[in-house]
Image (tube, helix red, strand yellow):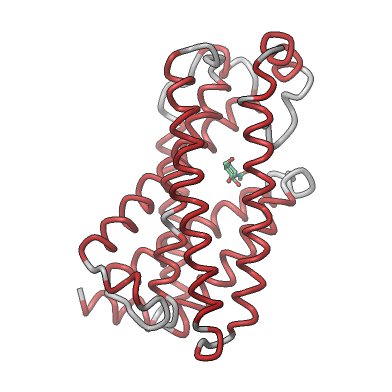
Amino acid sequence: MEALEAVLKRHTGPSVVLFSVLFRVVYGLLRKMPAPKNVVLDEFQTWKWRNLSLSMVHSILTGTWAVSSVLVWPETLRDLHYYHTPLSYLLVCISTGYFVQDTAEIILMGHARAAWEFLIHHALVICCFLYTLYTHLYVAGAVVTLFVELNSVTLHLRLLLKLAGATSSTAYRVNKMLNIWTFVAIRLAAQFYLTWYVIKNYSELHNAAFFMCALMTTNIMMLMYLCRLIRSDFLRHVGGKEYAVRNGTHNSKKFLSD
Ligand SMILES: *[C@@H]1O[C@H](CO)[C@@H](O)[C@H](O)[C@H]1NC(C)=O
């Protein structure tokens, strides 16, 4: 493990590129998996389905990895600044690879304009993670940010079920509750812990002002996202059918379907 860590640290750039290529390979494999009938009828929907499946792979992998490493090494939570293990360094490398791959895909597919929120988010994540990988600082902090991927699992599942036209299924209803719960208990909790940590240790941290800005930006994005989620999954429920029709056809090209 130490040897692996040494290699990753010596060749950080190539390692990140290697992991983005690996995610590309997984994407290729996912293309061979069957998709729901109504999805394959439309090229854009098919692309969205595959893309969400790849995001799902990344979220399951990094979310469970991040939580397990905190369970095995609880020091991670206490020292976000200096603490790291070979496995947490590897985790950040892999995740950076995914974000680089995804950013390249957004730009190459020509969705940059429609997905500008994702691009800002990804640019911030890539900046922070590369900083972490090159300076070996805040590896534990990066691990804690990856907790939010557990909530991304339910967020992706929600969109996958929507694409499959299964919004009236029990699975959708159960996932809807789980989604709000993980959003608050995991995503918001992780964000607030990180923000609190930076405020509390502000004077001792390297580049604290930059990380504070990055955190504040993502905090605002998260709260906006939560409002949209509640509006679309809970408040519009009354006119549900009408909304579903509108959402299904009219907005099908919309990138971020609520
Ligand atoms: C794919 O979907 C996920 C989740 O909505 C998003 O984070 C990601 O940026 C999308 N990727 C591309 C290439 O559009």
